[in-house]
Image (cartoon, rainbow, N blue to C red; front, side, top):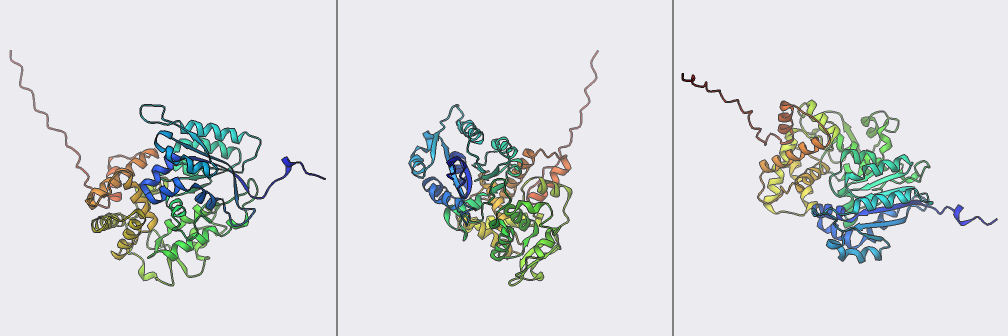
Length: 424
């Protein structure tokens, strides 16, 4: 019997990709200009890396590849995308403020695909624009896998709505080939409505082990847990049946050690480090710190760790301003040498926030960097709808600024001068 073509299912995950070129390119320019150039001029390289799932059934088949760009600014890149098999949609600026029509065009096309006859298993949105949060919600409601590729800060709600988020550092690693895995395992695979395929099993263990092995010192448990949950979001429920993060990481073996003390807990490679290499007991975490780190993506560092990051940044920038990848590594190593271990992921997050505030320069001081970062944290709190009273704001500034930000004293009300008695 001949099976009608409409009933034949080819192996692989049927995927659709929608690229907000302006958003991703500008975001990568701030993170890694070399990665931005590869993104713009060789789209086939990184889409092939993302499509490869390590097996025929786990690989993605991008049935739809759409790229939305402003032709007035980025027309020179059009040929690279058309040659890579993308459908390029011109989205010129329609307002005096430079706002393009990318958002509406992308949303309309994505909704047409969702309602179309071909059942797309996974929608990939390459944009850090939180305006697409509602679109991601529609995909989830239709039981589709959703993946966000973000080259810049990602709103908390947008991140949580998506099934998978490819961070700017991971994406830059794919583009520049600086990652040993270069795309393999960066995006978690799932085959439509079926259970997760075998290649995803153990992804979290692999990511955490790789992170610990490559670290120049012990890393905080929160950093390791975040990396694990990014690789396998399902662990959030009960850590694979182990109940707690500590129990899950203890079963990894291969020299990976964990200790819940000193606060906030540490993970290290026992073949290179020991408990003696752990930092001194960290400061007790306040309610403000717990609230901010839980609701936003601000790293769960202590006040002394934040302070050391700013001091190390000043020193590294003064010596020889390196590129973005070298900067995060140099600052991380400088912090470890100073006795305050800070993960490279945390350093990168801080540098990313400082980049968007234009605070990085060879003339920057630890104080100016701390002030700029604190303003960034306050803005993240505002976007997350966190509300603090005056004393809590002062506490947040002391913590996020590492004690380097001077909080202006509350102005005292001027004494009222009694009016002279009216003359008769």
